[in-house]
View 1 (cartoon, rainbow, N blue to C red):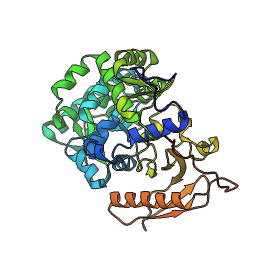
View 2 (view 1 turned 30 degrees about the horizontal axis):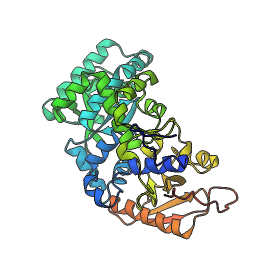
View 3 (view 1 turned 90 degrees about the horizontal axis):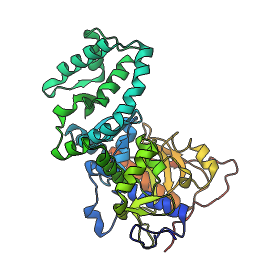
View 4 (view 1 turned 60 degrees about the horizontal axis):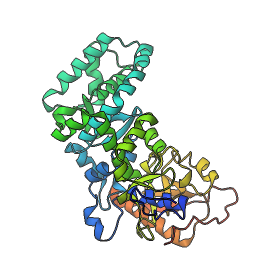
Length: 401
């Protein structure tokens, strides 16, 4: 029997793959919810980021839409304003990959992951010829330039390194910024015409008292992050979380034991928190519709095992495992890829199979949401199916009651 922590049968026991997809969609697309609970759920950019813990953001433009897709009515300018106000920042909190997160969550994540990332930098520094003295001079130069609330764009930061006698070429500048980010010294903050500006993290967004307690208690910090991850990504496995945060399974299992009373066992391997387990039919109408999500989206990258997201293994290959391009999602299943709007506002969608008229209408509505986010007219052109035969193979239906 599949049970919750309190012994009750899980509502997801009867249709594992479909239920897992829809449970994840409900948890991840928090701003898409409808009904009485909508007012209590996150719709603002800050709340979306808090809910997901961290949003992968190596491509800044794609990451802005990852937040906008989850907060209906939000525009690109609204998300940038969250950066400008210091509500969210962009840094390398885990796996050496840029993510958008809140300043306090960044500190908690770095308290867990920075040591491992710093170890990888030792060999990188050796390869590019960075000595300890170079690191110290670079750090001093950036702290001096950024003190008192000053900001620097990337080019200006690289020039400060040159002025200090440190050549930023051959990836040295990038690796130094990564090193200082691991020290919780700097982060990418306010928006600029192109990209973002660097800030001193503590000057830009001072740490709260509660986060200091978590940073000082690694076990409590990992439990806190695990529960946050499951709220925004569940149902998920411990292996999913370990891959997402980049920590060993042994540490993750200890966190799961500490958090046992707050965790729901969806099946033998998948976990969630109570709020992420759908009841009854389990799929709010808006969540069962179509979504155009960005490349590198948490709906894909939040998991080690992504097989449940695809109706057919060939779709997984066609989409580059969901990473090669922005993805079209129908009822929780990745059903095609799409392009960013061109200069004329046209977005081209390439489905994996022929679509029904109902699905096409839903995708046009999803494209309209992209246009409202960008604050410019956007139209959708649906191309020929990526499959060789173009046969109609329906996207799986939502799970029933």
